[in-house]
Amino acid sequence: MTADSSEGRAHPAPPAPDPLARLDDPDRATFTIGQAAELLGVQVAFLRSLDTAGVVEPARSAGGHRRWSRAQLVTASRIRLLLDDGHSLVSAEVIVALQDDVATLQARLDTQT
Image 1 (cartoon, rainbow, N blue to C red):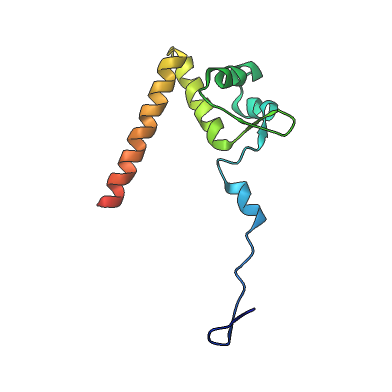
Image 2 (image 1 turned 180 degrees about the vertical axis):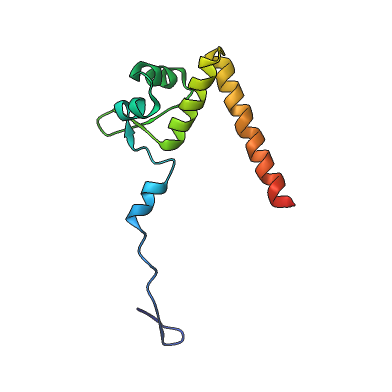
């Protein structure tokens, strides 16, 4: 409890942040490149190529190792599916960006009605 000096009343202290909430953060860079490759069923080289091309840019640990978030893994998976369908990396990147734009615009429309 903290005292409110202007009125002399005590107020409860704000709750401490839940450290486990980070587990639900889709943008938290959690996975090593090996874990990411295993989860997606792809080769490590594929993920490295996405990083090199700038399609998905994983965070780096203090030691310089790539760390991937769930959101980045979703993007990599979407790219992989498009590549498997015969699209080039450039066109797959454009398709994913356009799909994301459409989803954002649809969400805006849904909140306006």
